[in-house]
Image (cartoon, rainbow, N blue to C red; front, side, top):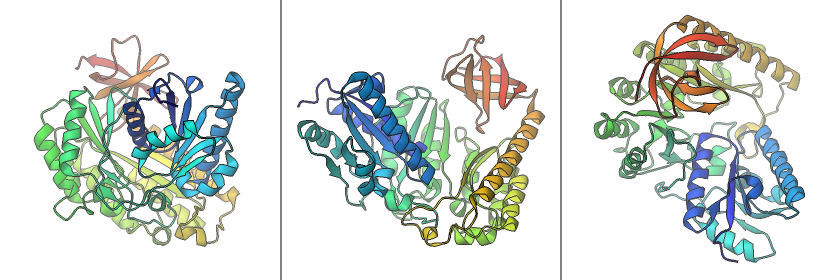
Amino acid sequence: MMSRNISFRIITFGCQMNKSRSEHLSYLLSRSGFVVAPTPEEADILVFNTCAVREHAVERATNAINQMVENIVSQRGKVPVVVICGCMSELIRGKLLQKMPLVKLLAGTRRWDMIPSLLREALDKEEKICFFGEEENTPFLENGYIRESRTFAYLPITYGCDNFCSYCVVPYVTGRQRSKPEDLVLRELGDILEEGFREIVLLGQNVNSYGKDLGVEFTFERLLGHIERVFGQEKIWVQFITSHPRDMRKSIIEKVQESNILCPYFHLPLQAGSDRILALMNRGYTQRDYLEMADLIRNGFSDAGIGTDIIVGFPGETEKDFQETLKVVEQVQFDVAYTYMYSPRPLTASSRLQDDVPQRIKEERLKTLNTLLREIHLRKVEKRIGTVVEVLVEKEEDSYYVAHTRSNLRVYVRKKEDLRPGNQVMVRLQSLRGTKIEGKVVAAGT
């Protein structure tokens, strides 16, 4: 069967890197003659790009995929070609075919350039196709994306991870870190600007270790310096995520301080506040190390944002350990936080530990943590009511424009203002409605 006029839709689960990889896969499929369907219900091919970082993510994706496919089959009376790829496929490939009998093509995380030709093969065959490429040790050369947003663009600069945190499955499903050559990063960034994007997000499982696999001359600071030298006079914002605290350095903070375009938002996953638990997690830093880096950031900017990820209920976590986490949260005053209950992942070192914190205790600790984070957020926002900030308008949502500051504070502006996504405007923070910060435009931007 020819691919011409055959439509596809990609549904993505998980992190920003997954979203970026879906944009790349969309480019590969479109270049091969497939066309993007307006909705999943209208697609001949449904591609699910999956996440395996937590057991809940696997269960949620499995249930959502089965439910969506069943609904489409009942509506159309026809089974779409179902493709599952990404981290979940790589991790539990054998079980997936049992859990999802309608899957036609199962692929892992590598050699996605093969997926278009494999899809053509799947369209002409009755049997299922499984494809899992070997781990690559070459530079990361992925390029070409059909981007979902029209205001910001993801630009992955590394893929894979060398950290092997004891709870994390990422190195096992993505492979070791591979960095994108600097000249390719700069060329892609130039292309993004020509397309009219106002914000670029440099992506990596650990952006701070960029270039270690290419040689000592390729450092993250050097890349940031070259980006500033080439693009520093442009009217753009550049963010980077995620930064591993072990590899966060004063020299990186200084590059942001010196820049016209780098945003003072640092996503530094804490994961735990107890030195004992951090050691069990193989995080490579202590509570003191983390607090010192957070102080450098807070003291280095008048308005910096610090984001984090935190896990509660890691094996062996006592109430005292948990209180250490709360202490760090109170001291750092996080601006953004993603919180989770620990769940053991296959292949990881911590899966060999006894998962001995009862579920009830995990839930209580998560609730306590989230309550504290919410209180901190409200206290910080209340102090900022009445101040004027510059925001970038991201999108429309119900009766609001959704925008954010350079430090990643989300602001909602009522649609009665004459704005459109991509505008940069000055806004006065006026009120807090629930968790929404409302602002009013006080000066037109661009």
